[in-house]
Image (cartoon, rainbow, N blue to C red; front, side, top):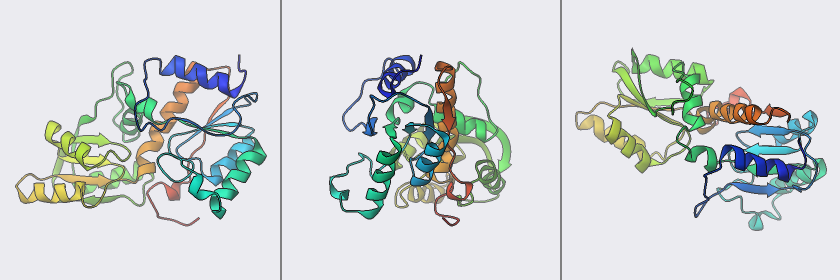
Length: 270
């Protein structure tokens, strides 16, 4: 059974996230389009860019499940964008193609087994057993910080990866923090797990990098690898797509990847 877009979204919430309760400031929900139309297929992506929306139209998909905002801000507010030419171009495509945009961010992150942590660990060559929540702290085969940075960049296609620390430092324990958890969340993880290195997606340069620098000055060597937000979370988006495929085998689910040159931040053209 496929039914309408809205019916599919209701089944998705009930089947995959039955205990989730939205909190204040939550961002999941319908962002554009008519959910009463019949569902033709689901595209799952990191960000509903114009490029990926065009790809979805060509694929015959009319529901886009995106992890990040569509309209350039956390809450997808649009009142101030009505005269903006970029917003108008994106809105015109959505309406012309009959697309429905749904943001799925808080629900997968809220569970005990975050698919974004699991996906990142697997992409980096450290897959975790199925049925066991993927840990944020992992013991890995010893390697130097410089070598680890190169391996992470290569595995994630993150040409824009930046790292800080002593390149010769041996790394045996890492903490994974995909996305942009923020400086205080990073600090708590570092205090709790005492890793040799933190691998994260995005930082404020005056928060986590400054903490790392002071840790080193205090005699607590710490490596920091910043992959770029998209590079850190694309493996998790694939995990979300696989979860939808497993729960709804009768529905066409397509993972819509981001071009490799855009995964590490601002490197590359286009």
